[in-house]
Amino acid sequence: MWLIIKRSKSQSDINFFLSSYPNGRFKKHAELLLKQIEKQELALSNTKNDIAPLVKDISHISHMLKRNLIKNPGAEDGINFWQTNTSTYTARKQRSENDTPKSGTFYFFPGPYKGTAVANQVIDLSHITEYTKTKNLKYVIKGYMRDFEGSEKNRNGGDISQIKVEFLNNRNEVLKIVKSDEISTSDYWVEFEDEGIIPYQTAKVRFNLVSTYRWGSNNNDGYFDDLYFGLKIDQIR
Ligand SMILES: [Ca+2]
Ligand SMILES: [Ca+2]
Image (cartoon, rainbow, N blue to C red; front, side):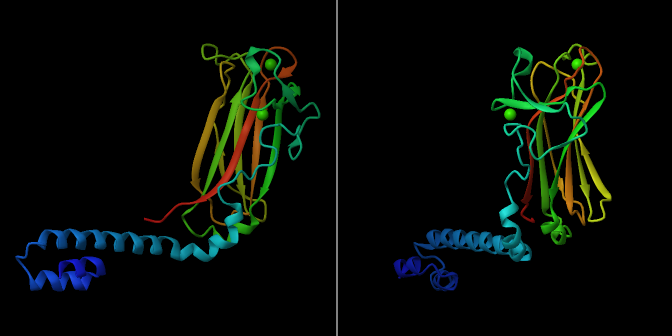
């Protein structure tokens, strides 16, 4: 009898077995199996509930999820796809021990510009605007910053790198700004990472690399490499 019930894996069969043989020798086995099945059912129904409200949406935007939406994120393709406010901006190779690229051969370098140099790239998110009313569509921002003359001990010494990401609606109004700290160290590449909910009505993102000249030669040494902007959908709990 128990072997038949065990194979059926039906909750009602197991309950019937337990009520028929309340003190039977397979009682504990039956109770354990019942718990296991209930757990599986619960997990399954939770999964269904989590994806149900967005399942259609995901199929429309799945091609945009979990990948880097920045083109030429690490200067390996020159400064293609980036707008700059100075013609001195370039992708530069390592020249000394203080400017090894974070990865690849090149990093973003503003060049000889004694001011605030900005390189930016606009990411079109018009495909996901209608999904911004959900609270589980999230952004992930990452990037690396470095300076040449600054150091941990001399934080006021060098030029400054800062990542500044603006979320805009379809009228180019700024909905939210995500900013990194102002980085001024040459000792290593400083990582910035931020994650949050995409603001309601976001239609595009402007990803800015801001380099402020302060010191030294003519060079503006606020460097950047390996930028990342991605979307992800968190499961609703
Ligand atoms: Ca690179
Ligand atoms: Ca400098």
